[in-house]
Image 1 (cartoon, helix red, strand yellow):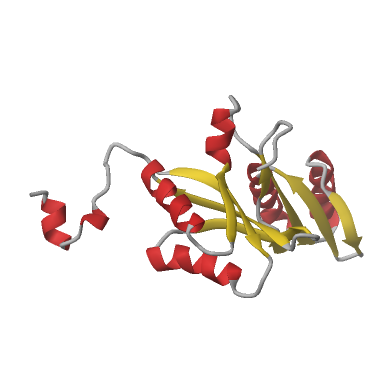
Image 2 (cartoon, helix red, strand yellow):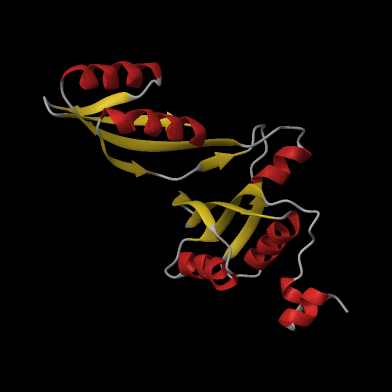
Length: 190
């Protein structure tokens, strides 16, 4: 008998050591009703799965459907388990692993974007440098006075992370991020 199975008493904790954790984006179409998000999130917390990013919005007003976009990580086996468990929740209409779907369509990754508001306070050379770098990153100034800027930046998560890292020494005060919005390329819907 497997030593790990003997140690825990359960086969649930046996993992395939050859599989490496991957980051995937799941798109979940649900009824827009109270408690649905709590049930979806409860599935993750109850099983110890981490959520890297979460966004939710009603996307089909006439049908009262919302789209939940979840970025999570795990081995391919764990990600498949998450998908199947999400599909069993009653108000869930459809679950699509956008990374798997992109591969099926012959694409590298789904399109993923995030919006962030970044507040930077400073004067003198730091202020000028923050404005110059924001322009290079195509960040828009949406609020400013003589003591601070608030920048709006949209792009890949890596771009947002890089912008935040560059702003830290220039007087970064506060960050507000939306989380990832994602979909696959091509004419098909989810």
